[in-house]
Length: 219
Ligand code: URA
Image 1: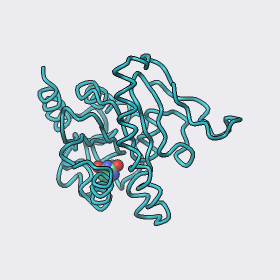
Image 2: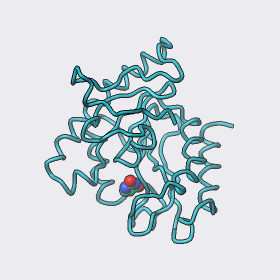
Image 3: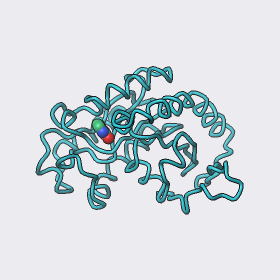
Image 4: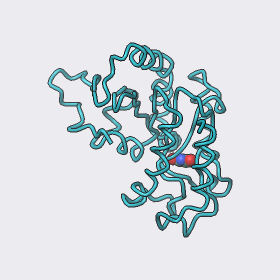
């Protein structure tokens, strides 16, 4: 199957999914959208009110800011792939429960395999913690990690920057690093310097390692 076919199949499956209780309150599943061949994939937390209404990711205020951030980094929304760790809206926009994350892994992992991006950008704490178990966003935002042969870059959630104006420039600066991080990721993958389970690039401004997360989850 082509990446397009796999992503279409996943999208159809999410629309009728009953793997977790979130299906009970959803109006529309939000499987994700974008370029099946994108070298970069953006993964948020879960659909909010407008996403649940429209069945599309990041279409509310946070989505408008995400579009601006993508533009600043030289991307158009349709050139990249955007999805969430859970495909149905958690009621009241609460954090997804572990069982919900676990149920939706079935879709996210297949999306990642089908697209096979060089870089995964996590948007917000929940998505970051899916990849980097005990990461702290205030310590590791804008930095690159390697996990299962893929670069993961943790970003503040665009909505956080809307609520906390002091984060706005921080997020913009972090997004501006993406083109060079993509080159770094592509070069590393092409020369096969990244082993399947390697964490080659832990954050380490502090020589004592005090700013490093205690453990990096490799899924
Ligand atoms: N916030 C998210 O994490 N995802 C969306 O799709 C919209 C808002």
